[in-house]
Image 1: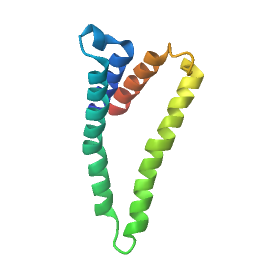
Image 2: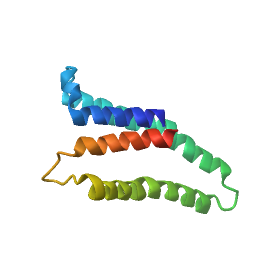
Image 3: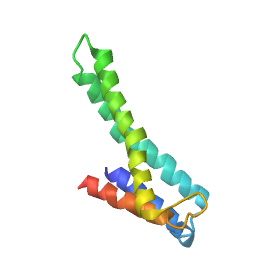
Image 4: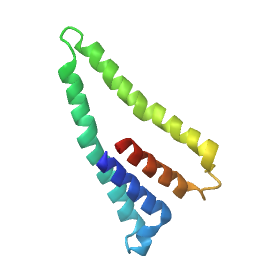
Length: 119
């Protein structure tokens, strides 16, 4: 969760364009934020979680139980989280394709929620 929160903080820095004030180009900063922190979060969250799923599944129903646990995790990550983000955007921020002025606010909300979940 610490790695995830740091990644969200760097996304907020990019949204506020503070990276340019620090003399870091957008391409380098995007690479650093997205590639490095996605890889680290996969390494420290997904791999141990799925390894644990493989350990706790009883014999004779390995495929069914592992599919259920990993499917539930993927459903939360790929469906529930984006829907929750879209709801927050629609109700409170209002970022659209034509009006991106509140994008940094969305990044700040993501940062605050990541810290909230951490604690």
